[in-house]
Length: 374
Image 1 (cartoon, rainbow, N blue to C red):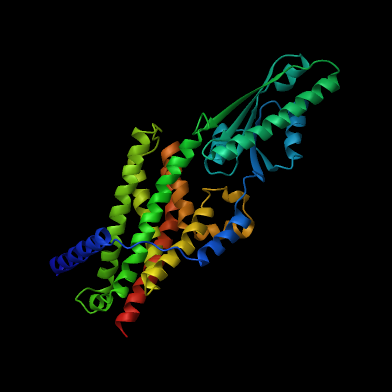
Image 2: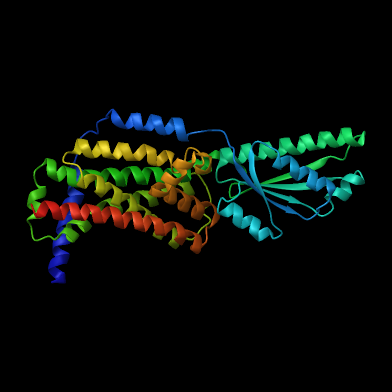
């Protein structure tokens, strides 16, 4: 029995691969998705960084350190200031994007200012989002420079210069290429896997071969697996090739676990292809499938955090992004590649991807079953 199932599945998978590589049809552009995209762009896309959450370690706790922190409190750009005593907690907040900025004030800060000596502050920005890191660091530097100028007037003499030491974690030199190229792994894999899976069933219906497939010895589950496997294999291979190019040619260091990276890529593609098969199960022509792909694709990109941080979007779109597999895929891939994200955090983001994939594939399977019973 298992041998027969294996033979049927391999035959269907072979057929799907032939369909993928022999289909030369051009993709057509349509009108409706740009309207949706325009709405998303207007509401969600912003180059301004605001609502910044900051984590502070204040070893000094003196008058001048408290005065400086109050400047951040009263700034229009900063939403909250959180105090911790453990550097590991500060790292945890930035790792999970609970804070976009870290500030460490040494225990001799107020003392050095009183004695007209150098006083140091460590500003830590999250370099995974290069534009945001640059702007957040600039805001912090501006506030500190303003505080320094006020000290000069208050003391009525030239105050000690506060040396600012800025470190950008995970992307030390704030190279935009790091963020862009790693993000392109997600973008290209998403586009390819979504198109291949969305056109799969729609192509069969357009060529009037889907009914033959339904009345064949193949079960709904076997059809689903046969349609699922080729896009995953092709998109996975593409992702690995792009990753190697980024490592070898662009010389961007890979910091994480290769095993975790492979597993995360497979699960993420499983979720996206589930969305593609869901679109395909609702489409009767390839044109309808392409419409569905474009209607999903651009909003998914905009709500993934690729263009602008999710935290800066209106609250409605932040909640809507929780249903977007690309948000979790983007976070996991950049996290593993650039900063060696730990297993627990990866697993936390894989769970929603698995749920999205299972739900969309279940709906697609029920669609096959409904047509079979007609």
